[in-house]
Image (cartoon, rainbow, N blue to C red; front, side, top):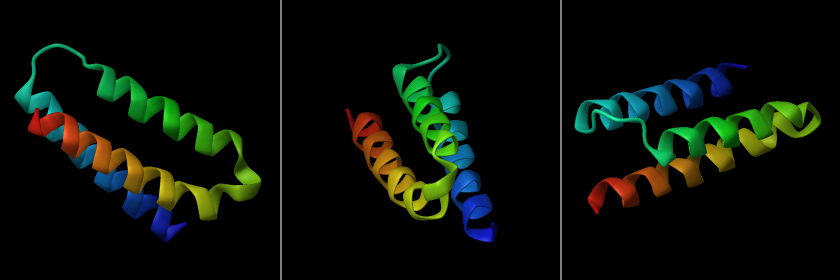
Length: 67
């Protein structure tokens, strides 16, 4: 599960940056949490799907931060 831990660390860093930029909770935070929960519900595909989903989420987070 080393890759999962690394991916979750990346998400935590992204959320930390987001929290520093904005004082109120944002839809991005909820989106990230929803996607992570979806991954965990599909444990049979966890190893394959988590990395892909987190990359997509980080891209979305970057796009929303640029706005």
